[in-house]
Image: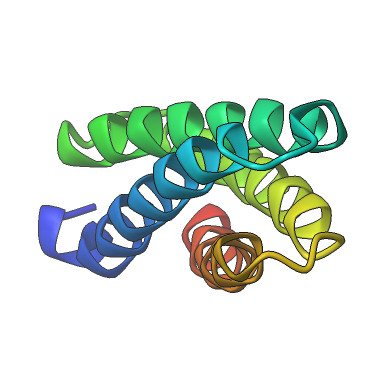
Length: 109
């Protein structure tokens, strides 16, 4: 598949990395950090798999669709966790994670 075909997914993954890193940092500043532990963990997992997916798509990896499928699952899990919290950064992150999951699922076909 051409690099251009991956572009939308790459863009969504990059946006998701940014949102997850912002959410992670903001969660660490919340009063009850322990309550945010799972959100922080999934923010990190999600940012990591999104970065790996971007790399895989950029180099036209034969495993890109498999990696995108896993990326969609992790984005979905992160979004589910983030939406449980009322913080603006969590709600915004959830929205971006769900959008990324949707685009990654299309890539995974």
